Each structure stands twice: as structure tokens, then as C-alpha cells.
Image (cartoon, rainbow over all chains, first blue to last red; front, side, top):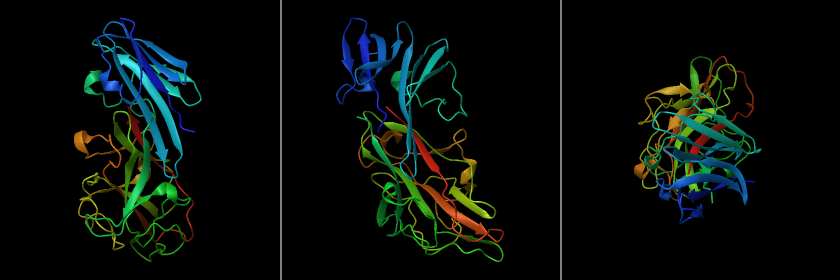
Length: 119
Length: 189
């Protein structure tokens, strides 16, 4: 069974929309972004308040072994101009781990390549 | 929907024109076998003999990640690693330091395996070889992407090649080896 979460955004004017083939991650208007949520079905797994100068980042991180065994961790968080950050890791069993620094030699907790919209 | 991504290897054909793109999920287990022949058959034929001196080599294998269904936006940050184990005394799994070009428009990094010689210096694109088992989950090897913008965002797009070769020296013991786990990790958005 594939571990899949979807995201939902809420803007500061109350408008909401969900991830789909038309609503893609780079198209999120970060100037109006108020809330970023990860959902499993219709259940909220994680909710991230993004007021002020918090820059959202988000990834689905996949580890695939020869033979097809797959492990997935979602990472979602924010970083700010004063170098503060919050990173949340959502594991397949549902538990969440939070950190405020990247760990370069960890299996999951290393920094992604940030996209231009995330800087 | 999330991307569908699989691990492939190419074999046969001619330089820059592989004859077959093989999905490793369709094989085995094990899903790849190093031997002194260039095919995908999981059998006990064409083993790498133990030399009386020096080293013997398997034919090299060109491995890569291929996108079967596209991500919403892109795949990047590809890394390779192992379980850090190994095949035992006198048996080594080499990995090319370089990651030759493979993408949806080019296989220029493919050099057909037609000899059981070291890939270092015999494969045009490989200069240095490293111990594959030195790469673990916390110390990975980066795998490049030569698709447009250096990302994978469409069906059929691939990573560049990761090239492997088994090496056996005279201190090895005979017999079939226990399976080892090789892993590729990537970020998707």
C-alpha cells in the first residue's frame, strides 16, 4: 500500500484549495498563505501556521530498494529570514518527529534542494 | 497522485544504444545478478571465478531510476546507498564514481558490457571506482539527473547511470552469495 498524503492550503482571505493536478505546489501564493495542512484522506495529520515571514517547504521523501520495498517520509516545515526553522517528519506509522536543524548524516533528516519558491 | 518510479538497468545492444531496459521489479529475488555475461537472467550461470592471483570481474551493469508516472511537480535529490554489509572476504562491489549520461533523449553514457575487465579505464565514462558498501543511509552517493532543469517531471525520464561491477580476488570462498540490499532515495513534490 502506497503511503500518500495530500496537502491543503488556506489563504489569509479564507480561500482554501487542495492539491491536485491543476493546483500544484509551486503555484501556491505564498504572499497570502496562512495555513498548510497535510491530510490522510480527509483527516488532518499536520497543520502548519505560516503567518509572518515563514517560508514553507515540503517534500515526499522516498527510499526504494531493489526488489520494490519502499519507505516514505513526508517532511514539511518552514524557514525564516533570521535562520529559524521548524521541520516536521511524518512517518508511515503516523508518528511525527520535529527538529529545528537539518542533520546531514541522518537517513531522513537531511536538507532538501530548496526550490526557488521556497527561498 | 504520487509518482511511480522504478529501478532499471540496461543491457545488450551497442554503445549508446542499449538493447533492453530491464525493470528490476520484474526479476528475482534477487533483482539483479552480477555474472560474466550481459543479460538479466537470474540464474547460476556464468559465475565470476576465483582467480589464483589478482582479481576477476563481472560484466558491469548500468542502473538508473525511471519515472513510470509523473510526480505532481518534480523529483530531485537522488541518492544511492547500501546496508553497509558486503559479500565477504575477497568479494567487492564497485561503483563508478562518475554517473554517465542517461535521460529520455540520450543513452550516451551507455557502454555495452562485452568483457569481464575492470570498468575503471575500460568503460569510457568511468575513471574512478569506489566501494559501493561504503555508502550507507547516512553517507550516501549523489546521483545526477541530466533531464531538462536537472529534474524528473515526466513519464520516461530517468536519472543518470550508476554503474556497478563485482570484483573477486583470490582470498574469496566459493559458492552463491547471500543477497544484499541496494537502495535509491529521492525527493518528490
